[in-house]
Image 1 (cartoon, rainbow, N blue to C red):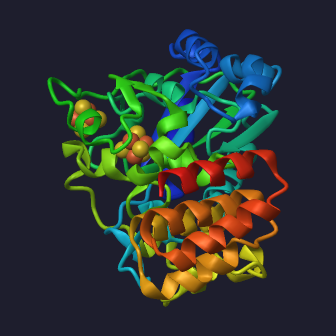
Image 2: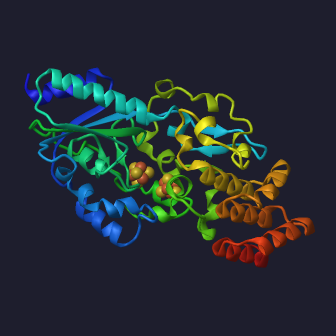
Image 3: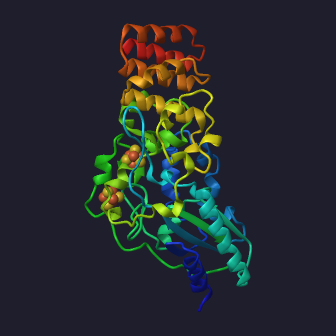
Length: 372
Ligand code: SF4
Ligand code: SF4
């Protein structure tokens, strides 16, 4: 057996669903990425700008590296809802399980050790969750799937429901070749279904409009024009994946990533995010839901209750008008003005406006009061 096939066999043995090899050279998406950055579609993800050179050229990530072993691990599972007073709040399906970084990272390390034991040439470096790589484009080159109109990678059987990881290797391995068979054809279901029109054209995502970006990566206030489009989503969004016919028959892999204890009974979880003392690190141990930090979670909860009002949420939102974070204060004011109208509410928001010291939040409260 040649060295490449040995590496692929070991990766498969370790439980990866998708495996392939690409050369450690700039992938086809490099020029598109530069253009995308130039248009500002990355929003506030400044690290993409800061690391652009490394992102387009993987040689800068592992100097002396020769090959890229790309792996995929399926995570398809049924819809994940959190129970709230207003009815279900939705989180991206992958976030219903334990944090995948650990599992994928450990498995990649095991793979690297096995390859070392087989005498593969060093050095090596593992990457989980994009990091400084255009991973979807490398994965397409390696034959794991094809890049879709939803700006993701679609794999046979799993569709869009999988994580990618990479092992950069010093060993020269023959590429596996791709992309995998399949295409979007004339379908444009994802583009038509996106609640915020974030898919500007086939394969081009404006992250600034994407609910996944807005509720997870983005720090700060959410664009007021997009708030009502967030609907029930409090962490991520799966709409473009859910409508995709390529993932319709993916197997249920819920058991693979289990359920973190914080989600064993999610009743009251979204409400609790509004409490100033909420500590995601302690309360959401082992869950990817920690990522937006307390400020982002409280903001998302406030916007959720603006879109899906519930009597029980009103006192929580009123209390959030005095939150330590201006982002949370103004999200709470937006929710109150939008969905809890009444003389008492208006008075509370007017008082909040009078004491607001943050210029951006103050302007937002003025706008909310003018519109209510
Ligand atoms: S994740 Fe949601 S908001 Fe983002 S592109 Fe897909 S459907 Fe649109
Ligand atoms: S929904 Fe249709 S257009 Fe969108 S990624 Fe899936 S197959 Fe492609």
